[in-house]
Length: 586
Image (cartoon, rainbow, N blue to C red; front, side):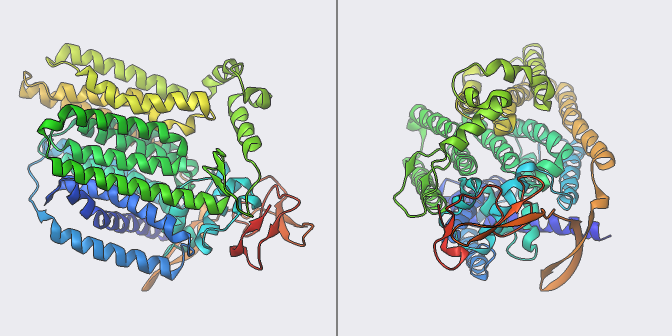
């Protein structure tokens, strides 16, 4: 019973957070052209709100811990004031009749909601991701309890990574969830993507982005549900990056495919690209490709656009990009003293400057290229043979191959059943960010699939979604033919999700591990249970300056052992002052 209670609390929390994001994003949604409060403006507002919240979390953490009453109070006040202003500015509009037939719409809706409900239960389960034990949980703890700590990268180099997922996860614990707040992170982004799609279903006409989003959600849910303990319950940014990539491509597809509201859709695609860069800086290639695509569309369509609308959208996006960039640089400056740590682009002149991360970066790069010869693999191309030889042992290889087959089948179906062309130029524009990101990943970053899930899977995924849109746009088809295709799409999307949810509920979901009772407190106290987060056995180590740290003894993972747990302390590590918040010297 307490497990069910906990799952319901997770769903309620996701709904409340989605509402906050929508309120925060109403004014930006209005500025980019949504003069009426419609389903379209609601879903666009949600993604603006996500980026605004992320920027707020970054800036707030420069001055206060993210579990502080100050952080929560300012966020609530901001959401209320901005939301109330947005509600007054945006006029309501009744939604139109949905395009999908009712029974099939409800089948697809029920399937997606079932998957979200499963992830709500799984959120209470065991945390098993290796990197979560290594540094994710530690980074979240420090962001929760302290302002951004100067030189935290000196305690352990991974604490200096520029990554929005961990402060965001820390902020999710400010309130009734406490230290369990990180469990909400990845499921929240899945729920937001599903919400976006369900709002699209109620539109009169389904757009290219709707089909791309549907395909992307199915692609994402299969591994995330099947391996939820590792990729959803655990606060890994890899899952968040995949979901945000899928949604960004859906909005880019809408902007490319239709001149109607393309500025609004393009703006959301760019906002999500900024979010991707904050989550994973190497996604800058993706973001720049989206920006180039939007500029090219503006150059082609500028004569038919409202100059005022374009200027407002451009100014808004520029302000958000500058704020996000400033927040990210400020966080890098404090955590490590490096710009874009661990890329080591520039070293700031600060007393807490961490050691040059190049050796650690090259070791990581070489390990993922060829673990048997990591230092030689860090340079040159001799590692490719070893990397290719390991492909049959990775599930991503088989999912990607299956997606390629599906995309080819849908392309053939377009030629056979649709009398419209594929609009290849538009498709290539939508594919460009994914292709650019994949090339950058393979050439310059660790070639582990988890770093590129979204762009890699969405190369064939985008082709499939685009082809389905072209088939459904065939005006020469009969109503019977259209109904048949709707049935095929619903069955093809629902069946794999239902299968993986059913299998995972029976074979993967570890209900027996959810035994630790907690109190969810928000005016009232509601008990729930979750799995215990491991506490690593450690031994104390006194450094030369009398600073005592904890060293994990069974592995290099600290898990929930906190604070001052590190697998690899520098001999000269020292506190800058008398307290942890004063930071660390190398």
